[in-house]
Each structure stands twice: as structure tokens, then as C-alpha cells.
Amino acid sequence: MPSLETFLKWFDALMSAFCTVFAVAFGVFTLMVCIDIVSRHFGFGSMPWLVEVIEYVMYGGTFLAAPWVLRQGDHVRVDLVLSSVPKPVAIRLEQVVDALGFAVSAIMCFYAIELLVDAYRANFIEFKNLAVHEWVLMLPIPTGCAMLAVEFVLRFFRVRGDVEKTAIPLEVPGMKS
Image 1 (cartoon, rainbow, N blue to C red):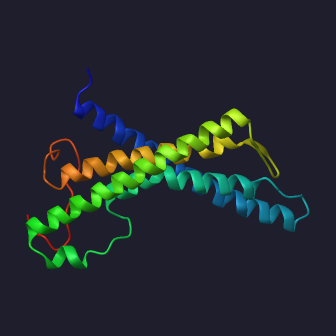
Image 2 (image 1 turned 90 degrees about the horizontal axis):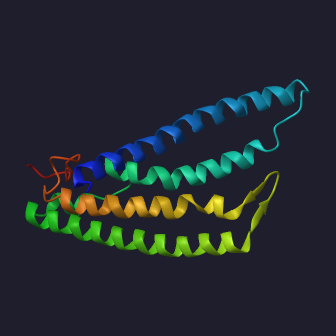
Image 3 (image 1 turned 90 degrees about the vertical axis):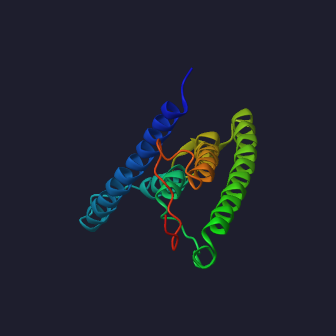
């Protein structure tokens, strides 16, 4: 049976893979937009599908990269309260926020799965320049929300130091260890 350490390694690898793919796609799309502009300028035509693909990748990549951003602590947060209360209170407040984050992520995941299944059963197709099955476009939402839920659980225990050996320790700003 797989251990927690094995799960965390796989989870970290999955988060890193999603972020790497998103970063590479972002770079490729930046280059492709430049090529499209030059191509149109010199009368070679354009890539009308490019903006649509960029939209899909940006929205999907945002959901899939969110757990990694949370892990790195690069998300938006206000640390004013945490830095002005005693360390034990700050730890509990951090855990409350992590528990709420888990709850919101789990609820979003549940409803996203319902929408995904409905779109799959109804065979909805998004028609713009490309024809794409709607369930494919929705797939990053439950995936990203499930990964966020897992990351919030890990943060909940990490703030106490329960998974310090196998994960990146969480540092609460303004608190000394």
C-alpha cells in the first residue's frame, strides 16, 4: 500500500508537471502571437484559432497551476492579523483558513464534476473557430479544485509541523520558529 511520502512525491510531481506545461505553453503562445502579427503585417494570413486556444489554455492552466501557487505561498493574502497575534493564535487562524479553503475547494470540485458529467452526457460542443467538446474544457476545473483541496489539507497539517519531513514547511510571516 502506498505511503503518505509516496503520495506526496506523486502529488508534487503532478503539480510541477502542470506548472511546467503551463509555463512552456505561455512562452510558446507569446512567440506565436508575435509570428501571427508579423504574418498578418506581411500579408501571409493569420491564425484565427490562436486566440481561442490561448483562452482555453490560460483558463485551464490557471486552475491546474493554482495548487502550486498555493504551495509556494505566492497567492494573494493579508498577513496583518497573523503577524500581530501570538504564534499559537496565528497557527490556529492559519488552520481555520486552510480548513475553509479545503471546504470551498471540495464544494467547487463536487459541482464541477456534476457539470462535467452533464456536459459529457449531453455531448455539448463549444463552437467558435474550433469545435471542442465542452467536457474537455471543463476538465481542469474539478482537477484543479481537487488538487487545491489536497494542498489545503497538507497546509493544515504543515503549519503544525506534522508533515515537515515530506513537504515544504509553511512559514507564517511575522512568526519566529
